[in-house]
View 1 (cartoon, rainbow, N blue to C red):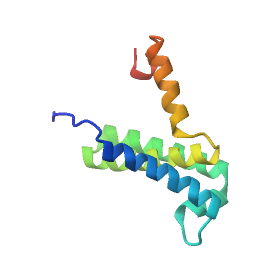
View 2 (cartoon, one colour; view 1 turned 30 degrees about the horizontal axis):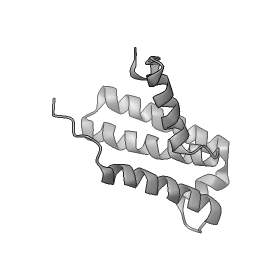
View 3 (cartoon, rainbow, N blue to C red; view 1 turned 180 degrees about the vertical axis):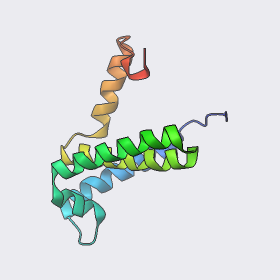
Amino acid sequence: MGVKKPLTDRDLEFVKELEDLLYDRKNEMPRGSYTTAMYKKGLDKIAQKVGEEAVETVIAAKNRGQKETTEEAADLLFHLMLLLAEKNIPLHKVIKTLRKRHDKGNHKHIGE
């Protein structure tokens, strides 16, 4: 098992940039964009895609290597962020919820 590398400021900045891009695409709806196509299909299709990617992530984790699991997890994270943007839920609210649970000693989010 390898040594865990911490998230860098650059990593966190990329997540913020990706969230900004998802909201920009929602507002501008540029032609030829996958994100635009998903927004046009609506919430049900976006939610379905999150579910599909979650299942693919689980299957990869159980039956495949780290590379495949990482790729599926990236797809899941992207589509979850897309779903949140569709619902106008900024990622910081999700993080705030996790932090609040952790601060209260409610560690369900880490399996306790």
